Length: 283
Image 1: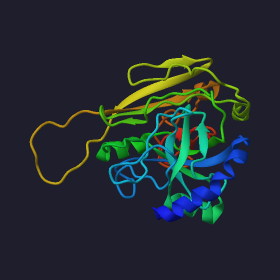
Image 2 (image 1 turned 180 degrees about the horizontal axis):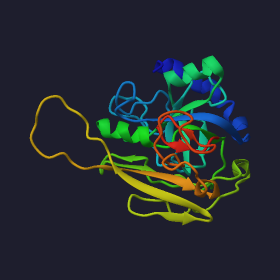
Image 3 (image 1 turned 90 degrees about the vertical axis):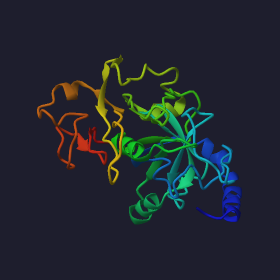
């Protein structure tokens, strides 16, 4: 995290450019998506590098958070020297139906940008009051990451799903995805309005001609050294994938969209293996 003086100077310099950037809604393809939260933040906790007006924690540092709406975007971290994503700048992820805001730095993101000019954003999974330990990290590993398209400087009014990615109070992980077609149309406000009902750990929903499939699986229990009494609680995460005509014609059973995988080419057709070891569409 940078010093407060440097942050203030950087924000002052960027503030003058924001009105122009806000008018330049655009799509950015092949953005590498990962997830982080309280337990794997550096240092662990909810501290952010940049003060974007969300508030500060007990230690006086800016805090992460957000519900995913336009007025309350979720925090994300990225390369500090990628000026295409300025501090406190906003993006929209169409397949998650959530808005995010650049509020933190990310060492791995900076490495990818400096070496290959590859966009990499790390999405906050919560919470800003307590962490979910190993279960939260397992959740992050199951979420739909990998390469995808984002909307930079998005308009207000796009579909929003405020279901948290990870709910620490119930130890639930929600990985609901939505079908996308013409992402560029979102810059003109296309696709606005209420989203289709999200899939949950208990049901599946149909949106237009695309099926959203929900699969519930037990989270691996964290391993702790030594013995200990009591029973091991059963917790769940929800993995949702989208189904299309291409998936219906999947010819490699067990390697279709949403199936677990190990290597890049371990999936049927044009699908690829994501960093979360799930078969996803190739962007």
